[in-house]
Length: 364
Image (cartoon, rainbow, N blue to C red):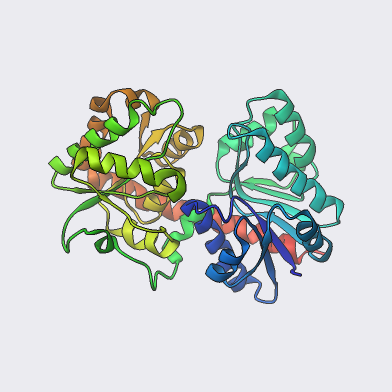
C-alpha cells in the first residue's frame, strides 16, 4: 500500500497521458522521496515494469478501495478526465473515484487537469457536486476555470488555480535510451516534420486524403513527413493508410515514449497534430506547431501559445490546411521563438501545480 494514489487515462498506450505519469512520478521522487506511490492502470504489470512503481488494475474495485483505505492522498495526474464527450461512463467512473477517495478520508487533488467538455446538464451537476469537496484543483487552462464558475462552483473559496499541463516539463526529462527520428528512417541531416493524425468521427471520409495531401505539401518544402501514432491502437491504421496514399512519409514504429518525444520533437521543423500532447511536446522543445482544432482543448492551446490553428473545416479541404503548412514553414524562426518563450512560462506554471501537490501531501 502507498501514500499517494494516482489515477488517469493510464495503461491505454496514449503517449501524452503516459508522459504525464512519467513526469509526475519523477517530480514526486525528487520532491518527496519518502512517499510511496500506487498507480491505477489498465495494464498494471506493464505500468510497474515501465515506471518502477506499484500499480493495480483501475477496474478492480477491491484493489482500488484497498489502496484508498491505506493511502493518504489521491491525485488525478493530468489530462481531461472529467468530460462526457467520449462517454458518460468514463465521467461517472472518475467522479466515483474522487467521491470514494474523499469518503475514505483521503486528501484529493486534480493536478493540471482540463475540465470538459461537459455537454449535458446532468454531467455538469454531478461534476460540480463532487468537485466542491476536492481539496486542491490546478487547471491547465483558463477555459476550464471559467467552466467551473459557470457550473456554480465558488472557486474563490476553493483551492483552485490555473497552472499548466505537466507535459511542458518535457525539457527536463532524461532522454537516455530514447530513440530519435533516425529509427523511423529519417536520414542524418534530413529535415522532418512530425504529423499526428487521429480518427475523428466527423471527418473520416475526407481526413486520410487531406492529411496525405498535407504530407505531399510538406515534402515539397524539402521536409520529410514523420507520422507519429500518439495512441497506437487508435492511430496506427490511419497513419499507415495516409503514408500509403502520399508515398512520401515515414511512420513511427512502436511506442512513442517520453524520451522518444523529447528527442524527436527537439529535431523537428514543426509538428502538425490532432492530439493535444503532440503540440505540447513540440512547444516544450521550442518547436513550432500547427494544431487541428478537432477539440476545444486544441483551440485553447493554440490561442494560449499563439500557435497556428486550423479548424475542422480544413478537414474537408486540404488547400486550407496546406496554407497553414506554408505559413509555419516560411516563418519558422518566428514561431519557434514564440514556442520557446511560451514553453518557459508554461513550465514554471506546471511546476506551480506540483508544488501544490507537495503542499497537500505534506499537510496535516
